[in-house]
Each structure stands twice: as C-alpha cells, then as structure tokens.
Image: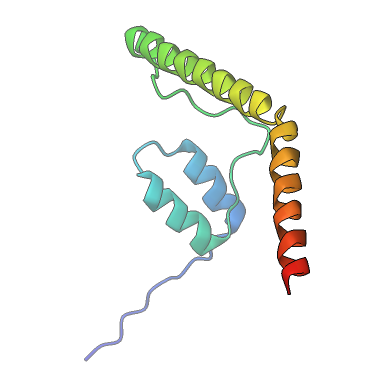
Length: 109
C-alpha cells in the first residue's frame, strides 16, 4: 500500500468568523456549531439584527403589526402589575389580623 501524502491547513477563528459572515446557506444550528468548534464569536455585539422579512414588504408590515400588538400588550401588563403593587394596605391589614390570631394562640398556652 502506498501512503498518500496530503496537505493540512490550519483555520483560525478570524477566518471562520469572516467566512460565516459571508455565508448565507448555513442553518442557525450549523453556524452555532462552527462558531463553538472554532471559537469564533458573533459578528459584532453592537451590530443590528438582520431583518426576518428580508426584501418582502408585505411580510415586513405584518411582522411590524405583530410587534406593535405585543408591545401594547406588554405595556398593559406592566401597567397592571404597577397598579397591583399600589395595594399594600390590604396586605398590612391581613398581617395585622394574622398577628392578632397568633397573639391569642400564644396566650392560650
């Protein structure tokens, strides 16, 4: 048997990072595996996220509408939790009643 002589190359994390930025065919999981395997970080922490709609304006409008509805629901929900925190009077009344019961039970001993 003859021994085949092959060449090997070393890939740096910078090269992988640049290649991944240019690549559009990899799935999210494949890209994640390559980044983890070669120690290549994300493109930039301050870079904006890519638009899911791409060049499709109709899809972009629909996603914007969904985002606005979710933001409105979140604001309403936060408003409800803030108003719920404005009710400590009921909690103090309940704790006062509890303390009264506990004192009565201690006296009974």
